[in-house]
Length: 236
Image (cartoon, rainbow, N blue to C red; front, top):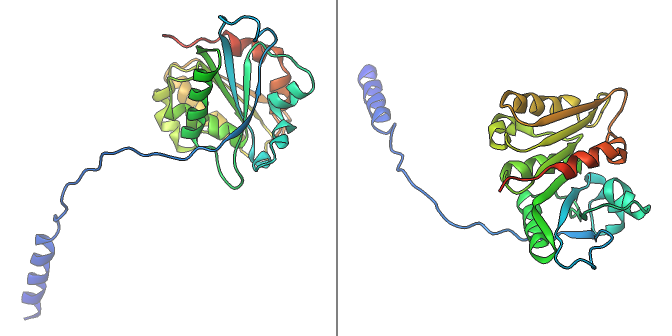
């Protein structure tokens, strides 16, 4: 009797093993975007009404989140601009709300808004960020691989998306990291760099020896970095 019961249970289990009904959802997904930002325009912007300019979108790290926009000036391009450094480009320094991470769709929405409302050359739009902003740079590039002419992620990482390296194999990228970084392991940058290299991507990696988490100061202070960035142009 026991064997017979087990047989019926096994048969019932077998009969119910494939009761999944194929389904599909197709629809639009809308998010609310609420990013404040500093906008810096280059000298001569107002004079030449026909000229279009490069755009640099900058994403800060986790410490600058919130509703005090002045905190964004602590590091990176907005710090340099506040100190009087001129740039031959429109610079948008975004602020991420408190307790949030960079949302790639939000970053893209602000980028599109600026292209539409300012005199921006859509073939020369760049994305860079540090720490949390480095992660946000990677994430936005993977979501929108044809929007930016080049990316420069600093002490960030691409997470598991390194397996999708071919998705951004055409996108010039210059990656920066310190080999003594105790906050974000340098292996995070090394891994995505190596994955991109295997695809033949135009990627570069600079690892600063003896440098901890702050690998952005040297990067943004380096004229060669800016020269490289502004030389990049997205193919039509």
